[in-house]
Image (cartoon, rainbow, N blue to C red; front, side, top):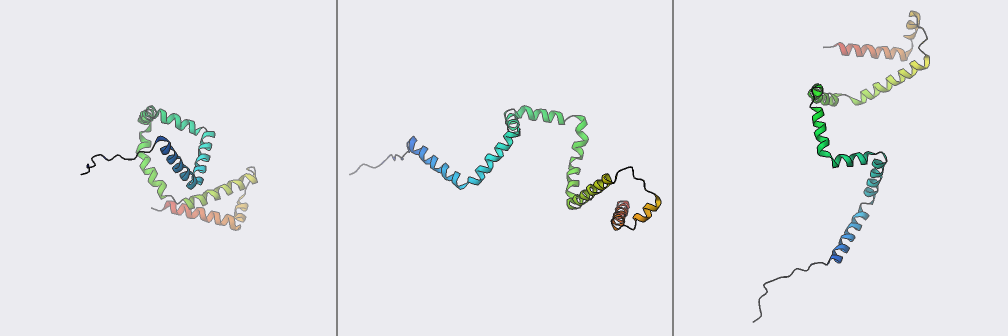
Length: 155
């Protein structure tokens, strides 16, 4: 009778075969993700040019000491009101209508540009104000201001 098999020896790749297999796998991954890799390289280049990469590297190497310093600094009494109000501030930011705020900001900038263009030395009389109310743009602005004040004064 034949002898029973008691040991099964697994085929193990040689070091050269494993390196060749790994290299082929990496080449495939690079080919499949070419755009992402190039964008990553561009991002790293921009971070390096701005000095941010050095900062991030230094922070990573000394993160324990850096975090201890941040926690120690933020634990000071002068930051207590900020930390207490931070959640409310975050909720407030969530409630703000950003589109309306952007529109208001654009209108404020236009008003500032017009104000600077006319010059601050120009004087306005009561009759000038009465004539200005006939201008549709001024009338619209005054109406908006009055509506704003009404809305702000409501309980």
